[in-house]
Length: 60
Image (cartoon, rainbow, N blue to C red; front, side, top):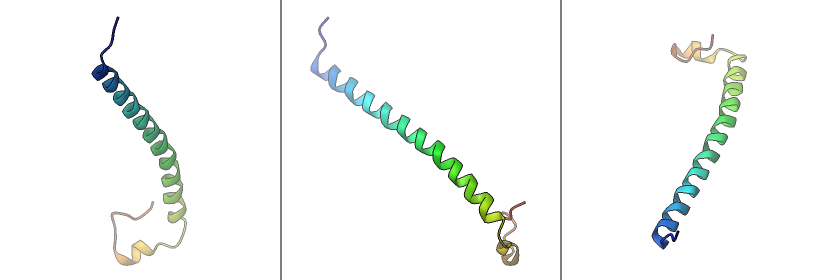
């Protein structure tokens, strides 16, 4: 079966987009761990947010 150039280009573009989205998902997964660690670490320090009256972001 013969495939046209347009179809080949579209297939290549869709594959490259899928690979980019997979890479992004993997990076976000790694960053989530770093963000959770940073949140835990920042909460173990002095409670500066309480002094400012920032009730929404106070760590518990």
